Image 1 (cartoon, rainbow, N blue to C red):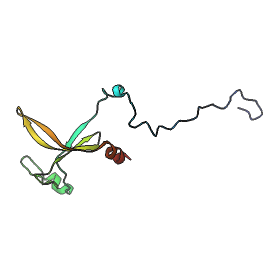
Image 2: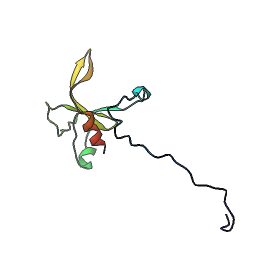
Image 3: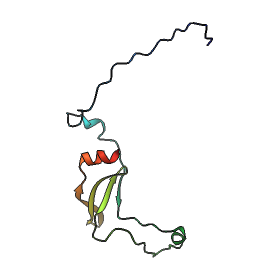
Image 4: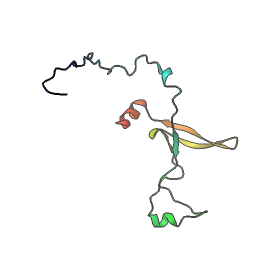
Length: 112
């Protein structure tokens, strides 16, 4: 556009933003998100090793984890820690019994 030409464009008008600070704890309709799929994962433990040792692993190898045998598993939803639990067996299938659930306020704090 030539700087000497007039434009038909006008500035956009926006309504004033309202604070949602009090929204937590109010009557929220969660039906909108109840069918959203999430990824649930369990972490038994972790281990660090050099690539040299990783390449030497084969069937029957044992990897020592940093977590003790009696310590609870970490339960994550979409990568966020939400609980701790213990492994249970029900009808020949593994499951997890939650022993400690992270509070909603703590989960929000960890997201930041």
